[in-house]
Image (cartoon, rainbow, N blue to C red; front, side):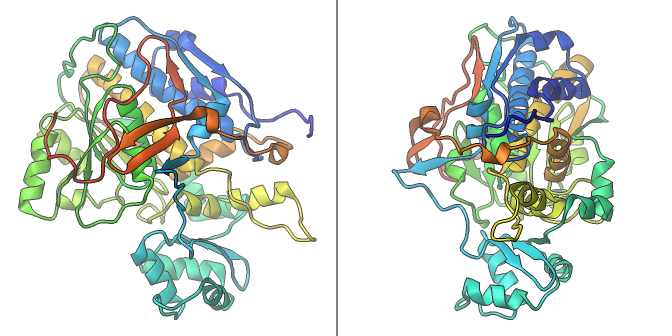
Length: 471
């Protein structure tokens, strides 16, 4: 394996930058212990540092809020290998490891490059196949590949977007940087924490030393795929009362079994008057409102951050998007794999791997790190905004996107020779729990809190298992 020095930004420095941007007290950083160094997974990117710093930031910010509520500061330790393993999202149900990708998802060659299609939801898959002139009930992947050879990559990307589908053309970093959306994302910070209304400081109850730092914080989790659910799970691990709100009419992916650990789960149909009334009733007692629907989706139903702040002064809203708040793609749907492809990561990873049989092939990152790191950064931003609300009052809006996290990951630098690192085994980090989905094995939390260990009080349960009410 190469001994070329890594150019990657150390995880501690990356976390320090996050901490400063959020305006949190510098003295809290003395409580932090980080171990390990990239590479820990086969990648030319600092995926270990991204995992470790985002997870540690969320845990330390939760503990700092706990300190503001009357408890002594406590140590937070995160090992890089454990953190990276946690961000793989590995889990099994009753001994079965689910296949998380539809047969039609993935990269395809086009007339002038490649496109990636995300087909995990039936309506996205069927729409893409119809766009290719294929029958969704009989089409094969080989037929889809043959049809895409008649398309230019950018033209298919545009045609898919016009139909509300999810596909992106493969770009290099240079191509992304030159694009209007690439320029828009480059101008954005990693995250924003904005005051959106006036309110007195929220009187979160004082804590006893043995209570977890987010105990008593009520979180409405209106998220589905995948960063948002990771954020809600992280908040639950640090003690928050998290209520996952799903529509009874929308599909979910099997990863919901893993990301629902520690949450209660209810169904509410926001397109009905009864459903909207039920959610407003929950808002009246909530501290955090976390949402990951397409930009403007919940606002169209009356639940914009501004409307929430008027109804519940002092609330903290956290909004997730795929491509950020600015630029021509601000309203576009997206998923981690697509953002990786569009932003240049797949092309860059393939170039770092070098040619195979004389050709360079695009290569995905070893985990959905944009989703996972963004989820933990959402938890970090939520805790930081609650800390500021307690000190300054006000209602707050935290905004993040997968693309902004991608821009941050690029800024962490590269790991020469990182692709030669063998993919590690993760058995030592797996824990068993019983759930409403079956016997669940999943990676235990990598953030080690010295006094109040991170953990879940509630088993993972299917959507709709609980009433729309606070416990």
